[in-house]
Structure formats: structure tokens, C-alpha cells
Length: 332
Image (cartoon, helix red, strand yellow):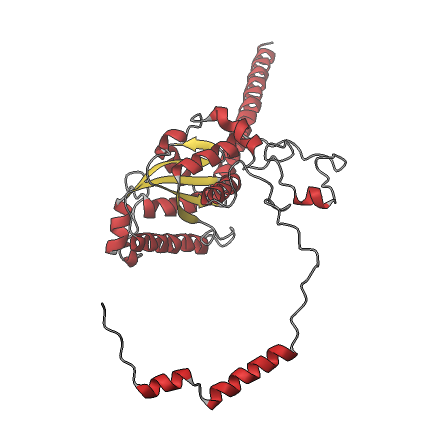
């Protein structure tokens, strides 16, 4: 049998007979309880239960609160809005290496913005981010092969929600053909047959990252390739130590060594590494304008030469004929 706890007599007396302050507190609490009536029960109508899908968020083929659904929305919007996308494979890059690479990339693009002030700046709009290969492949099929039908007319019964509480709180049916957004079941069924059909699909495996540009700008692409995939023989040398001393930090060099350019998507067309280097080798809009002016000038010079040649040949023929006639006149 466990020993009992020893309590002194004074402590036991205080426990059994409360003090005067404790008695006053208990009396005040009892009086307050007696004078304050209890609140009557409320019989007001309770608010209706929250609908599973609000009107601003139509039902999806998969639950919209999942992270995969959010990434799918993000990738689909990215593929539909960006005309130039580079695909890289990375191998266990550390967070410090990612930060250092993004820093040097932003510096290089900012220098291009300063060199071409007449063009919109792209340094702040160009993003380098890691992607999930499987979700990106599904979003790529949606962006490439899914053409949503036109929205229903306002008079359609499916498009006009009912104002009754029953229809407001009812759970929408994801299979309803009115829902044609990128995450709807209609979109999923429409592109399922194109699985593994896109040319970029064989490259979408392993750890991947994408570099996106808001517009197709060869100078900015050249600067990005010089940072992420330098190749001196192809015309994309790495920046010199004097021009970019931060590029030769250990974190940047280690991160660049772990990245490999796989391909690109330019204006909906898939290009390999050679095609990407060809686009980056262009001289931009100013260079293209100069080439166009030179081409038009050369065409004009050739046209003038052709016209002058024809006129010169006619003139020589007429002069030769005139000389023969003068000789015949002299003989007569």
C-alpha cells in the first residue's frame, strides 16, 4: 500500500473552512447568477451550408484545392502567355546556387535593357523556375491541343443560374458541358488522346526548369544563354571576369555546371539546341531592320543595273545601226 501524503493540520483547516475573501467571492458570483437571467435560446434561421464550389470557381476534373491543380493552372497560363520558353535539366542544385544563378541572369538581362532602351525591358519579366514534369506535360497538351468551345449564350438555361436557394447550394456537376476551362472534365477528355504526342514530351522527365520570356528578343536570349549555357564556339561566350566578377563565384559555377539545355518552344514551335542558338544569334529588331534595309537596297541596285543594262544594250544597238547607215551613205 502506497504511503499517504502528509498534510499539516493548519492546511487541512484552511481547505475545509474557506477564508473570508473566498466567501465574499462565492457570494458575489451567486448573486450575479441569480440576478442575471440566462439568454433565451435563439430560434433564428441558420445560414445555409456553404456550397462545395462557389460561382467564381467552377468544378474541376480534380479537386481545385490540391497543389497539383494550382500548378496545372499556373503552367497552362504560362504556356499560353509566353512565346519563348527554354527547357533545362538540372541536377540537385542547392538553394544558394539557384539564388546566385538568378542574380547573374538578372544582371545580364538588365545590361541588355540598358543597351536597347527603345525596346521594352525584359529583365523583371523573365523568370527561371523549377517545374513538375508530369503536370507540365498535361498543361502542355491543354495549351497546344485544347480549343475550348465558345461560351453559351445568355439565354441558355445552363448558363443562367437559378436564384432559388436549392440551386444556389447544390453542388455543380463537373461533367456538365458548360464548364470548359482548363481543369474541366471536358478539357481532360478532349486532350487525353494526345498523350505523349507532343514533341517536347520525350524531354519532360527528371528534374526540369524553364526560363520564360514575355517576348521573343534575340539579344536577351543570347545574354541568357551566355549565363546558363555558355558555348564560345557557337557564339555565346561566358562573360569575362572583369565585366561580371560575380559570375565566377563558386555557387554560380557549380550551378551552371549542373544545368543542361534540352530544347525550347518558340512561338509554338519546338527547337533543339541548334535552333535555340540560331535564334539567339540573330541581331534583334535593330539588326533585322538593318538587314532588311540592306536587302532592299541590294534589290534596288540589282533592279537599276538590270534596267540600265537593257537600256545600254538598246543604245549600243542603235548606235551600231547608225554607224552602218552613215558608212553606206558615204559609199553612195
